[in-house]
Length: 261
Length: 261
Image 1: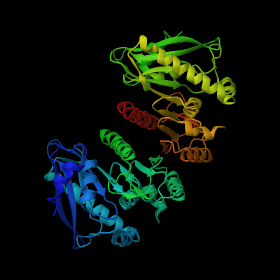
Image 2 (image 1 turned 180 degrees about the horizontal axis):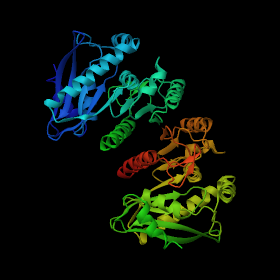
Image 3 (image 1 turned 180 degrees about the vertical axis):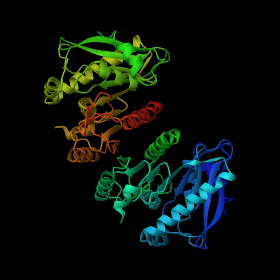
Image 4 (image 1 turned 120 degrees about the vertical axis):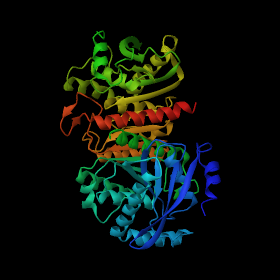
């Protein structure tokens, strides 16, 4: 299934033309149910490097999300992309994605459990790839951004959490006190899916918990600004300049937290 | 007067231990009145590099502001620090600073004129230092952040504008349409001097003008977070982690805009 992904990656992701990017399906189980995520890394790198959990947008594990994860990985990180729905669920359109994501969003314990299971899978790759398992962070896009914030609220012992145009709401704001590492929110200032009142509530939550947090508002950006295939004007739109800024901000944070080890 | 500054710089600014940082007073005139700013650069660099106008906080041109400007300059930029008050005015305490800054803040035409005069002085240094005069940006701290935003609103043809814990208010919001380059605001989320309503008004101003803007809110940071001598709890406090993040964000923006030339 992912054989076809590699040439696409080589064409579509800047900087990958000469990189030996590996995209490898990794099956795993949660409570006996089958899941399948993707391990993504540059196999030209042989010294152990930090690992990032990537939670994709509501469409889940697919070629587009793998390309974006490969961009995040570069030659700096080993990435494991979580399967948040189970192997049998692969949404092929927004309606299916909304149903799948909605079910997880409505059950935050389940959301946390599935995200944590994916962290465990990432950690377990240390025997096979050049991964420094003491340096792990999490990033997510849209639905996935909301997911990694919920993972942070669960007290997961990662070193940093970065949300790209993610949902910021939670039924568990008091759990922000459990957050163990810096949180960076990369937000499109015109994102209709994450309106100002949601941003304000999130800031209040972070302030109340005295979390180490940062929120970047990007002018002119709406939802999905990192997603090259997003093309719904004023709602979901790729913004290449802002996407580049956002990935740089992510790298700055992880450079900081991983260097501090 | 600034002879004493060099050893302080060498001791106080990270990364400068081996750099040959020059801090040179530069006299100039505006409408026949004497002003004196500081030219600051690493003279080990011989290839032309971009230039940054630096507008200091309300205390104006002094050793503390020179140290911070030297941190911004590193070996990447030639910095010229503006004298916003005239050579005879060197505030030595907050009351004097408030009076001096207040007079300039109350006269935005004067503020713009003095900031632009300093840009012209920076530009004129190209004959003497390794400066690429086509690559100029502006940064400012506190009062100086408010000043460079006003300079941006005047339509100044610089390549980027970065405000560190600056005031965001203006009597001229409609002038935002004149802004010619990306604006980056680095804001302490708990800054009592720049309250949320001022932030909201600024965002509305930028949105209305369709400016290229970014605003970073830093959790746990108040006013003056880049200033090592700021020590008034919950009002003006140095925050070394946030300061480092903010200077990195500045560098990211200037790397982007100067590379695009």
